[in-house]
Image (tube, rainbow, N blue to C red; front, side, top):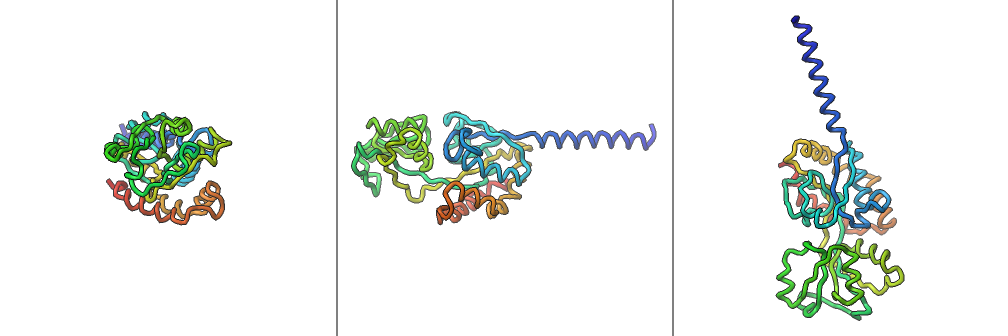
Length: 271
């Protein structure tokens, strides 16, 4: 075999390997999420706010993707390579690179026809009441119980709100936007009967989460990292926020809170 022929065969193998690598990288990744409108939902345009943000970041990063929606229990237990949502509610804390791309707030909700006013400055103010939460989202249940607060878990926000109306629970904690959205869907004529109180300091990130122990995941995470800062400060990003909140209604402290999460999770990017 001549040297030229040998080189030719090696070149063909190299090209084949390169084409294989390109085809693998071009295959869409599948992000797992859980239905949490108006942030994540297959029933909303662009999959909701989180979906619109994910589309923008993925477009800039050159990542093709789809979203697979799971029930909350399966989502929390998932070990998938690609996930989106709140990192804190995942049971399996794998080695993930976490990229915050937005924030949401949690709130207390109660039903006025059952309670004229529920005021609270501390947990002790809620003694004798029953708190509703999504199953598995509260770790320190004993802290509530020790303060005389009964905790009842549900598998959906819809269930929590129906329990409020029936008087089975006195108040519940859920994502503020999701609570309001679900009230509009279930009780459109009773929206004023539901009272919400924002929980100070309880902001959480909307995040892209990628298992970087998987070589493919490490490469995809690198792509998102490269475009994170530029995308967060782009006109298109701001336009998505204004479309969601309304022009001039984007929360004033939103960027400050998001920056805190970015700084907190930055150490996950390099490991």
